[in-house]
Image 1 (tube, rainbow, N blue to C red):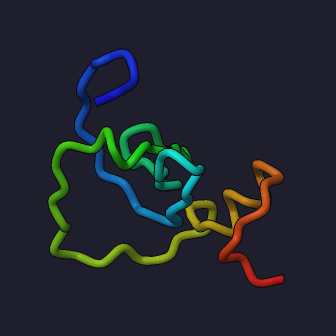
Image 2: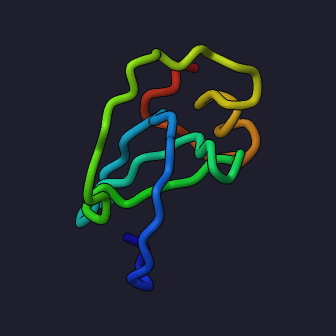
Length: 78
């Protein structure tokens, strides 16, 4: 469920969980949008694990997100 109340169904590649003091978010590659998205975990209503493992693809990794957005990642090794 989005903040505006709309529902959507997504296939995502979870990359990182972040805690912001009040909410958890999940930085992911979104297959629907073909781009990175950050989802609030408390707004996710249902999770269905996929039978196939995601294979690493250029442009869809946490390192790619960090490089593009210029953000630091607590799990990123420097």
